[in-house]
Image (cartoon, rainbow, N blue to C red):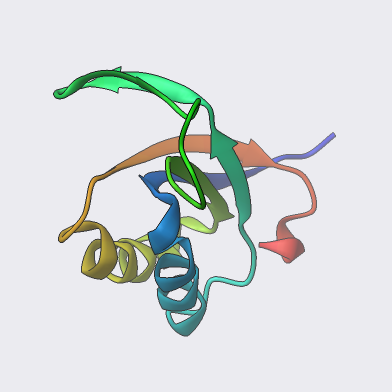
Length: 102
């Protein structure tokens, strides 16, 4: 089966900022993404979990699979939101089937 080169971008951000991030991605031409809850983790500030948080606290992961030539516009859009808030952006190479969907 033939696969096609793509980029996987994962953005971990504070849950209340999800709407701003996905709006920025949409304006940048990103046509699809998946939002996942993040249950906990550890970083510069130490360990944390979602337990005991009220409302939309905590973090979410926004995952995008895109064509490599669209990466710069996605990162520019994401950085406008992530730069002012807690967040991590990672990019990795991947292979996809049905490239016309990306």
